[in-house]
Length: 266
Image 1 (cartoon, one colour):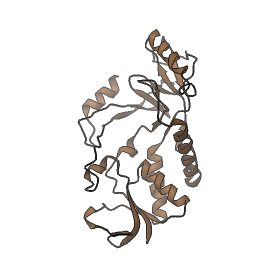
Image 2 (cartoon, rainbow, N blue to C red):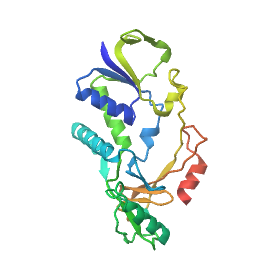
Image 3 (cartoon, rainbow, N blue to C red):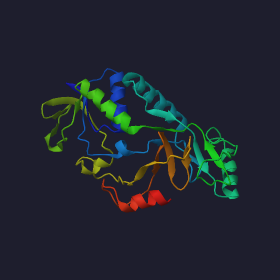
Image 4 (cartoon, rainbow, N blue to C red):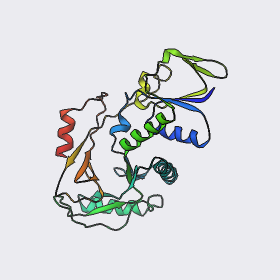
């Protein structure tokens, strides 16, 4: 009998699978690649909500756990997924500068907001009021993480790419059964796909669709993540991720001309 069946292998599913391996638990992961959020995400991590200058809940603990997890995966798979790089918040006025200084004086935000204005010049970016630097930031290359970790699970024969059939799941007092498998527990890590899950689709889970572009800009010399009306994330080789839009109504995976236009004109 397995300890767990995991349905979904995005960030949550990967983190849980890695934790089970660490504790010598047996499991199998089901993922038919129908959910794309992790695969195409910008992957930014940032301990401060910059619109309201408020700290992300339990930011220190979350960063510590995340860095240790990704380091372990990097060593195991011989790939880099965690890139620690500053975020610069572009100021549009003296008032925004003052708001930044006021926020950086708060005890809970002081470790994450530099109190020195950065006046570095970047090609094609007008920044007369400078930037504020957010500390302890970076991004996770989610595509590299997802691709390599799923391949790793396949090599251990712990990964099943077939679509999970909820109708084949049977519950008993001390275990569950799915087709020819028995397990003590089942964990659904499906993200927005939870809407198709008959056991949890009643939950008030809403989704925000974001679209981003990958552009090539030969003369853009950014060495930081720039936060302005959109984010600009350097990938190397003159490539940059630019995004993201937010749409609360469109729940499809399809790209849109409106999203492309918004990302490119902001």
